Picture 1 (tube, rainbow, N blue to C red):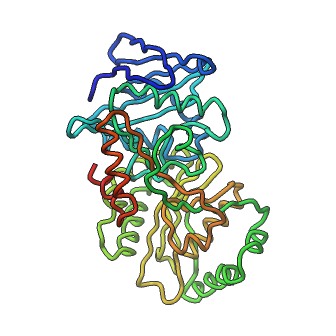
Picture 2: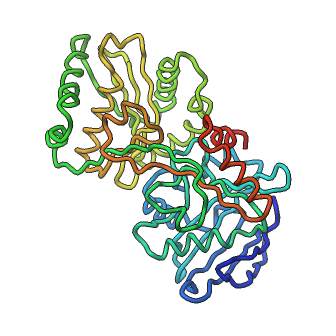
Picture 3: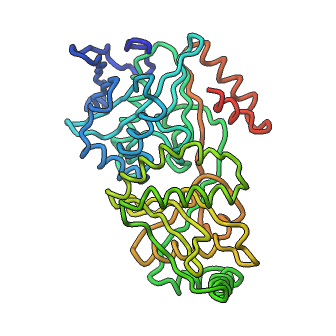
Length: 384
């Protein structure tokens, strides 16, 4: 890990000063209208209290910003390194966090947000849309990264946050991230706003399923049975993909650990659809900060028989989310046809490159050259 050191900044950040102690800390004050922002970088997640982190994660609006998710990720994927965590404060209040992993294969540090891979959404942990000071704080954090040269891969940032305009980062590619807005009082009102075909199938498919035996929906709420239920989820997911070793299955140890924490926090939404007592479909997701997300699924293709069990289970989960007052149901990254049937909007997720130094700008040129060429940039990210 490179030592923390100041780097030149176009915005005129004053010369950083270092604290003493077991963890190096870089601090800087921003001049002019930004003078209220105090930025520090450490190699530890402990510079922010759990309560402060929870508050910001909720303002960011997704579970992938939570300290619990990122700590679990680090234990599984980053334990050989040290994180680089930047914290911005105004008047002593934490307003933004950036948690980075540094990879330095051939001299040039490559920075990525902690959580890449399993996380659906990444980016600065703050409330950019709600708090004007968060935008300045995010800019300050990026300008104060304590490395003289680096290439930041800012991936899967919410498309409606204006990250590129805010930071000057270069867009590399955009991915779909459909959302179902739940602005209706009742399920009947929600259905009325959908197309005729959707309304008919939402009613007909459950009835057809009931012809094959009693239909029941089970939400996992027993910690003692969680491992067994996760086994069942992974089994149904494996059947759906005909035995392929998917990224979700390869991350099973990570998900087992986080699911236990999510259950204790009340975030876990693991549904099973059972017909005549036999589980035929599973839906794994999270409920956090007033929104619900469908993270991954599984089903038994042998059971289909003309009835899409996955569709039926997703309709049930959506209906329950609306009844419980969730503001939206997120279908997460990827633009599958079934998602488009449900979605009411698609803010998307964007990936950017932010270079500092000549070698980093050359790497950006390579990244831009492969952009759009048969997922070339995604494959480059996989190799890093």
